[in-house]
Image (cartoon, rainbow, N blue to C red):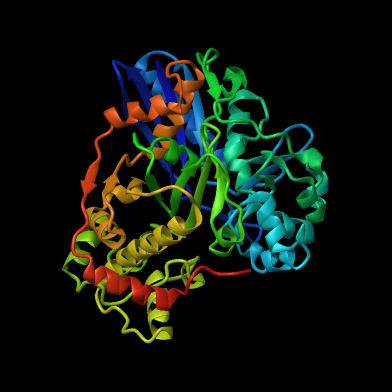
Length: 490
């Protein structure tokens, strides 16, 4: 069986072919493309129609590579962003990016009229200014005429599935990132919708990962020969897909899904929505297999990407890592989640400003910037692990890191030492692999998610780390606490 995973992140996208057979899954990347917001009409927007053209190009390469149509295709992307469609199913405007300025102050405004404790108890979702809920508040206040013209709202992967199949459906894992789904019923919460206000008619009941939407609408997509390819909805939020691919064969594990954002948490059968979880800003996002991804959303490799763009000569990531290895360890620290690093014009200037505000000497060399960022990311994992152990019932004896951060051996070693737990790194293409595994379960190739994880474990090579000297990292954790504070309240 051959399935296609389309994995689109906030920086790039990939079309991968997964081939199942003889107790293994083989992944082959056939198409890679860039993805960055474009400035239009005073806002940062996603060119989703260009993304669909890239998907079509990738599918053409699949046909060329295999000489046959794939059995199925599924799309996963980042969360929170959405499109609006008119009554004919046409895009009203390019969707606005979560990094756009329009959400500034909207969360605080909404929480003045909808109590934060009540909102968390109903949704279990982390408070972030980028959440769909606050994007919609901005839309209601700034562009009410656009909302009046809208007939349907779809999340980004839902729109891409609609373009492939001609069928509209909203998938649950991505829907939960809106902060408008009731965590106890897995349905839209009417009380929250009324508070926006948002018409319920814009939204359809969320469907579970593995739902089949039918076959590719080959004529509408101009993709001849794919008439029998099933469009299968995976866990469309890339975090949920990445967690589905964690090659975990035991229960006492946590995960770090490392990409533009780093998502750290564990998988639970029931949500945790008590006051301590809210105060520490954990989220209960939908997961594959009727689970919850109980996690915290952390700024991730976005900082390294910004440093690469700011440093002289735009060094490669390999060069950056080599420079960081030569820099003095644990010399200076930053809080990766500080607003200074959200979308600065210069990431090096943002690091300099943070050091100035906190009484630290600013870096002088490129390697010092990179080492500071990597060590601070590792310490944010250690802090999150401490809080995770405090607020949920599972024992945690090891950590699985998946995603792009696995490529950095230095980050892996730092993360292991900071958390003082065994760390297993891999797979890198976790979101795409999880996407493929959910498709395989849906089509009957695999019986369930547990079997899919065993297949991932036997198919994907992983790199393991054991903790080193705890003392310097223990001292760094204390410094990091003083810099960043504990948790945060709303």
